[in-house]
Length: 429
Image 1 (cartoon, rainbow, N blue to C red):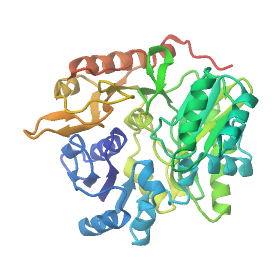
Image 2: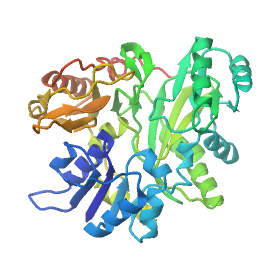
Image 3: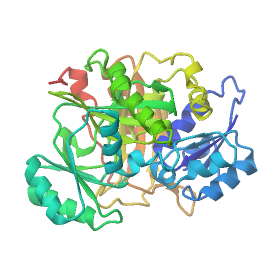
């Protein structure tokens, strides 16, 4: 197929990397394009300088290159309705409509849908002014969980015991474009990410993963877009995936269809395995980053088959997914100052050396080219180093050996990705 992938990050590079793996024995199964892409994606796809938020421009590009499938990676183009524009032109597209993407674009809308579908989630108050915000903080008490109602690139959530900090974050959210903030009860227990591929009717789950949102070891410091991830979760309860499909994903998809806004693409279900049972923390309307990097590394079924079946409403006829037996660990290399103020323009070296290591590949996120053509940092989360290994310990060792090969001035990364899981220290209350 001719496939066009929309986006610039490591998630999109992971998608392109998986599609490129389908080009076997020197025979190209796919002609890959990306808009606008990044320097890493350029190694496998033709890049096009198109605004990913411009539905008309994306559609025109898809028509010009004869794309048979368009994959919309990030949340912002989905919420902006880019998938609608492409779909209206009669081109198969992997990703929900703008209306369906409100499951991520508005946390208050997601709570409304969950309530209608009977999905177990945290109790929440939607606040539109400071008086309501203060009352909600006092009603739930510490730890305080305060979420921007709209999109915030994974950094709109504050979890803190400091009421003043919670109030300050909530007040800043109220001053934003949406003018709303969601205050929730705190959910104990480990978190799990589960991607569910949907076609408006059928739900096909991928394997669960766990990511690490805090910037520092031991889950210290502010929230980020994600500093690493791993799969499988040997500590997760047996039957968890079936439970989530039956109690969360399928009822949500059914409710969206009942409302006349069928959801196709990826429903990202963020979960907390609490002392009172499984609870939904959040929905996203696309693959999560960095979990995608680890999950797709283990997918043996051709990703193009899965995405095309979703786009064409044919998931019910898809063969059961096949998975590689190895463990996968992803470590994010972030630029100096991230997440507060990311530094850009610093040279990056050592990627080729890292990828010479067995089982290791490096995905680009915040990278660019200097005027002289050298690879430089161009964002907060710069690279994802992904490794497959015989078990988590082996995958961790390989991933960190890869990270050690990379040179980027002032960069930082967590050194404890998947460490507790490797040691058997993750427990479900």
